[in-house]
Amino acid sequence: MALIKSISGIRGTIGGKAGEALTPLDVVKFTAAFGTWVLQTTQNNTIVVGRDARLSGEMVNKLVCATLQGLGINVIDVGLSTTPTVEMAVPAKKAGGGIILTASHNPKQWNALKLLNNQGEFISDADGKLILELADKEAFEFEGVNKLGKYTQSENALRRHIKAILDLPLVDVEAIKAKDFRVVVDAVNSCGGFAVPMLLEALGVEHIEKLYCEPDGNFPHNPEPLPENLRDISKLIEKGRFDLGIVVDPDVDRLALICEDGSMFGEEYTLVAVADYVLQHTKGNTVSNLSSTRALRDVTEKAGGEYSAAAVGEVNVVNMMKATNAVIGGEGNGGIIYPELHYGRDALVGIALFLSLLAKSGKTTSRLRGTYPNYYISKNKIELTPEIDVDAVLVKVQEKYAKHPINTIDGVKIEFEKEWVHLRKSNTEPIIRIYAESDAIATADHLANKIIADIKEIINS
Image (cartoon, rainbow, N blue to C red; front, side, top):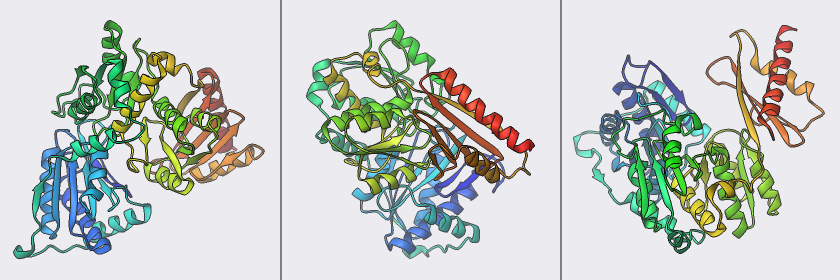
């Protein structure tokens, strides 16, 4: 059993003892803390709630909504929904905040409360700490029977979300419709099962093959959209005449694409391709996190813009995007943030922009992928004993490579011309994560192993 408290919310496995897993008592406590924070900071007594389709969602939803009502907060429940849909609903409903009930790419035994501010964006580090403090102290008070909050359901949030996407100048519905694309969708039996087909139909796509699109929460494979989890859709595409495969995670904020020959487009390259399309029509800057591919930087600089790297985490990427007036940004895990729509990772807007690019390019999906620089990321970790000072080890690594460009906003990232290594310590265990990128996977592995050897030498000395 596991319960993880972080600045962005609470995440854990269902079942077990209070304080050791995500039990009903924990759900109520953290919901009450968040509701109290919203009341104290915004004087707004409305909160939007939505959830993905995982098995515990209905139970957790009832606990959250009732707790908020007990605080005197009016609840707008958008029901089964995507994370970006809830993010857009918060400011649309002029709410004081939002709660998304999803553990994103985690397996079905997990659930979580993701917390949004009144802009529909993930709460800041400082606000997250305040909410955790309220929860620890149980510093909340419930209202009497005459001041209970109201509960209403809203069924049009997704339709409004899709309409806003269709209204974007860079989404070319006519070009997409004219191509008569044949598309396969793998939605891991969650909300993408109805959200993605609804979007595709609105874009004029008539040939949609649905794979795992029943939103019943029974995930047929690991829900993280990584190549090793996407064998079924890949085989289906190989056997048929399809132009594209679309894969989303349970809350539809990450997007992975499959080429017409069944090969992976690469989740790192989802953002690269969409950014390329946006930059073709909108001059400006881009942002991704430190562990994302250099290909975004290459595409950005080729278009005359400036690329900036943010610390890992959506809130950090959003803050950097605002600071640099970026026109597109996101994370290399298939998360696209298009501020023309809203500041949140959104697979639906990513699909619409990518299909517009694909339609106008006149290329197959695989040929389009071939137009971008090829980089490969090697992902590794080294486990350390608890008594080792991880921060001190990272400082020593930084000193060893002081002659190279180094970024220390989130661990240590060292650049070697067009190659890089990023070292980050885990917040919960004595582990250093080591990501390395090069134009060949063997070179990336070699680079990562070189740094791992350096770390071991530092520890032994």
